[in-house]
Image (tube, rainbow, N blue to C red):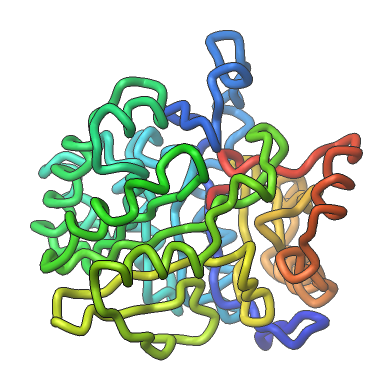
Length: 343
């Protein structure tokens, strides 16, 4: 089957696979403790796609033109025997890039080497402040920034490159960490990416006033360092790339709020229970698990996946505004949480 394109002529190239809805952090912008506390009921194991099902969907997606897989969560390293799944995904014809996004808390030297050996090409870690006290407050479990920095070193040593570090910037929370973060990763070979605070889900109480726009992040960096814009490395790239003029490396800025990039989006997202979402800001996913478990053939699953993509007209970020945000709050179902389908 040929690669499907959606109603805006965007091809399906990337599949982000959530392996679990669980996470050992309680970041205030993603899984706030007041909503994801001790009483929160996470998905039972039987509801999750098993490795056979994940591999099968990946293989079918590759047949439709997907070349890149990103494994997310929740926290994907909480999924047991992850290296076994990765080895199976790496063997799928047509898949040439497997990435993993993690908070770094479980990325030991040995784990990083195992991931590399299994077939992971690259990792992206999350670190929202270089200051330990600030980062502990954000993740709300007392995990220090120094341990994430150690995980970054482990990823670099294992060859999971280019290693990227994502930093979500929120006004009144950590905008004063922009320059310290930039300083920490200059000359390191690690690509630091600042991300505008986005209105994913409904649990984080997002307001436009809390967004530090890309232009302000850029101006903050430029107060200390000279940087020059670089062309995109590949179609559909999410980050605007900037190089330090003194050769100290690269930073990126992901500006989904102030400079949306929907026009180049080639990403679909698969939840841990097999629901396919065609937008990070989606409300309803399309169930692939039921036909999988009911005995549907590969051709039938491929036709369903292609049909979902072909009907896609998502461009939420280009339509975003205060009015859109207010409408979101009136939706009885709410928007899917980032912890459910990954970033």
